[in-house]
Image (tube, rainbow, N blue to C red):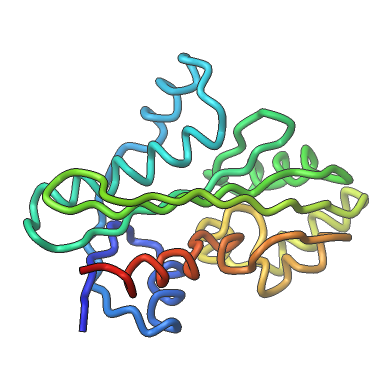
Length: 194
């Protein structure tokens, strides 16, 4: 059976691959995402391009060290009316992000890239549209108090298959994509890979 390397330390992405019976081994890329984002934003790159470029950079970096093995890189970002919103560094920042998203629609963009011998051979980007309920500040603070640090920093500011689902009035998109991995498209590519 085909085995891939996951160029990510995301336990969520590993869990999704495991649940879909995709054999994988974790080898984090350790790409400095913040520096890459800053440089791409200076060039006026869209959130979608940033997500795609980061997924490719992660996959290519690990792929250079592991010849003839497929390496999967992935990245997810929030696009709020063209503004890139990254994962919070602390709980204060998480609250600011939730206040910014409060009562608004935004896109969650997840990109995946498969590389071999240091070069991308496949990529896919998928979007989900989420509409956050209008909530009071105390409701947002209470929500954050119920979320563990692990969940908060792993899933951006909402854990869609857990407490986070209650933040939204509508969700249009695949749950795995929202959690960071468009796994159905990855499975399709791997099943046809020769």
